[in-house]
Length: 88
Image (tube, rainbow, N blue to C red):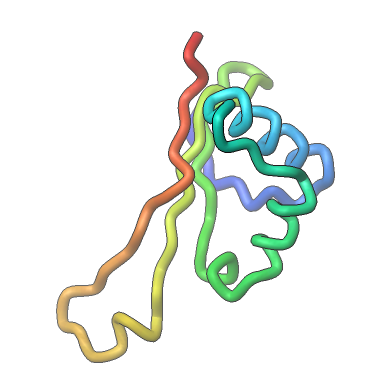
């Protein structure tokens, strides 16, 4: 199931960090780093789109909207980042 995922609970944040670190073992992040990012201006216009297999996180994509950059553009621009899918 694909759904927007704002990572509101501590358990959800821990699940995200664990999954991301499994997919990027050479560039791990800490829970504190992710929580710090979630307090940044970038996160206010971002959301994660997560794929779940039953209750297991299978993949995630973070999408951003930059209001300042889009202010004078006729074609609006968004960004994606932190894209991962469990290998299995």
